[in-house]
Image 1 (tube, rainbow, N blue to C red):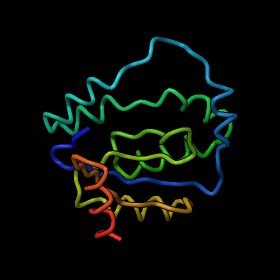
Image 2: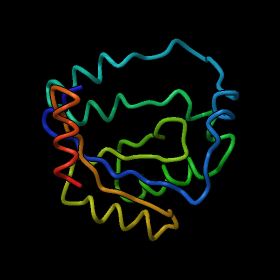
Image 3: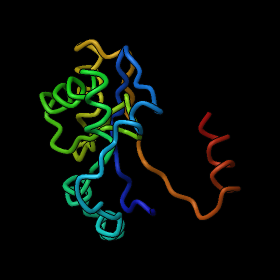
Amino acid sequence: IAAQPEIHFVVTHPPEGCPTPAVYAGYQFLSPQRGAEGIRAACQRGDQEQVGRLLFNSLQSSASQLTSWIEKQLKILNNAGCAYTSMSGSGSSCFALVTDTRRMSVIRRAALDAGLTRAYAVKSWYTSSIEKQIQLWSCVR
């Protein structure tokens, strides 16, 4: 998905992991899944707040049964002023969409001070080909 404009996040990781096979084993289909069409359209419009409102992770409930760190991270990010938060992948990392980029370092520091082992301020980026991504990644590193 082309993120226009750039979308910024703070990604956190707790001191305790979340085993992927167990997360999937605990997953229960509760309702029809939402698609990514709304998020894709919001990205194309550059509507970061709509992207945030549409974030979801179907595995979050299952992962939260395995570790209390999912809910702890989301609470830490919400307490730091992040309105749009979610678990990443099958856990145990979480993230917050940050619409005020001036606050990214403050949010990151709050996450670390609250006991999370890692926190990163990151931004999305888009290129038209894998070759271009590799070239850009090589320049960043």
